[in-house]
Image (cartoon, rainbow, N blue to C red):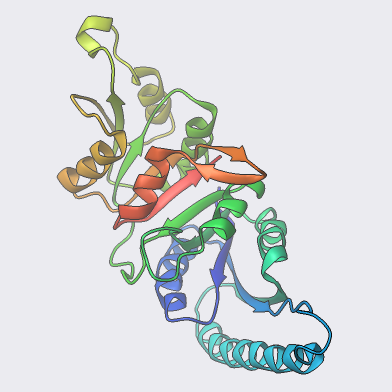
Length: 277
C-alpha cells in the first residue's frame, strides 16, 4: 500500500509540477503527503588569509539562502493549507554535500519519493537524485520537467527483466498498477528471438500481476538495439502515462553512475518514471 508520500520541493516553479503529480496520487491512495522543502546553505571555505573576508561572504550567502528559503516556505505553506488531503510541509537547510543523505533519511520513512527526473533539463540535479535512488531504499517517481499531471495513471508500461531491481520496482508499484486500466508488461530482447528460445519470457510475471488484479498484457519486443528507445516507443504506441523500470548502476570512485538504459529514459521520458534499486 502507498500511505506515505514524500515530494521534493526547492522553491522553484517545478514545485507546482511535482505537486500536480503528488497530490492526486495521495488522493487516489488515501495517503499522507509530506512536502520536503530543501534549502541549500553555503559551504564557504577560506581562499587564503587576506584574500577576502570569509566571514562576511559567508554571512551574505547565508542571508540569501535564508531569504530564498523563507519566501519559498511562505508560498508553499499557503498552498499546503489549501490542500484537501492530509499533509504537512517540512524544511531542511543543509550544505549541498549533505543534502542527498538528509533527503534519503526522510525518504526511508515514506512509501514513495517524488522528484523531477535528474537529466535533460535546466535544473539538473543528477548526483543528488541518484544518491536518493540508490541510498534511500525506497521507490522513486521521477516526473518530467514543465509537464504537469493531466490525468491519473491509467495506462502503464512496465519494462520487465528478471532482475532484483526490476522485481523491486514492480512490487512497489503494484498499488498503482492495480488502479490502471491497462498495464503493458514489456520485454526488450537484444539477442535471440523468443521463437528461437521457444519460451515466453515474462509470462510468469504477467501471471503474478494478474493474480494481484492487474489488467496486464505481455509484449515481447525484438529488433531493437537500444532498449531505452524501445520502451519509450512503446509508451508512445500505447499512449501510456507512466513507466516502471528497475534502477541500474554501479559505483565508481564512490559516485553512483546510472546504466545506459536507465539514464536514457530519465533523460527523454515525457511521462513519470517509477524506479527502484
